[in-house]
Length: 152
Image 1 (cartoon, rainbow, N blue to C red):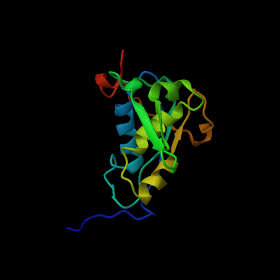
Image 2: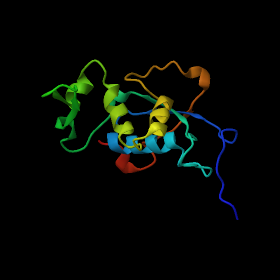
Image 3: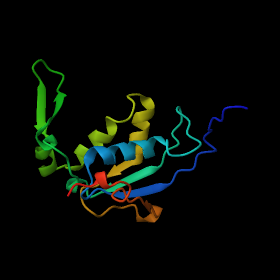
Image 4: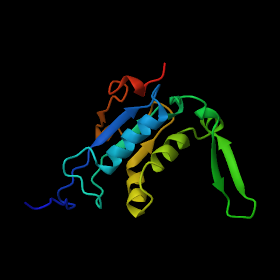
C-alpha cells in the first residue's frame, strides 16, 4: 500500500465564513488554523497548501476567558531598548481590532514559508460586512461545535 501525497491538481479549496461574536479566542483560532492547514481533510499533505479560505467576521466581538484581556502582546522595533507592548483590550478597542485574531491564528501555525502562504488564505473583518459574497462561502457554526466555545 502506498502513501498518498496530494498534488496541486488534487487540491480543492472551499470558502468558509465564521462569525466570531461571543466565541472564545483560542478555541476559534485553533479551529481556523486547522482549516487553513487542511488537517480536516482526508487528503492532508504536510508540505502542501490544501486548506480552505477562511473569512472571519465580527472579530472585534471575540471573547476571552480569565484575565487574558489584560495580558500583553510584545514586539520589538529592532532598535536597542525598543520593546513595546499593548494589552489585548487596548488593541480590541483601537483602530484595528482584527489584529488580535490574526496574531492568535498566526501563532498556532508552524513558523515556516508554508504558514506565511497559509495566512494569505485568511481574511478577518472587525464588522459584519465583508466583500466576499461572490465566492458564496459556506457557514461554519463554531458556537454549536462545543458548549465551551462560547462564553456567557
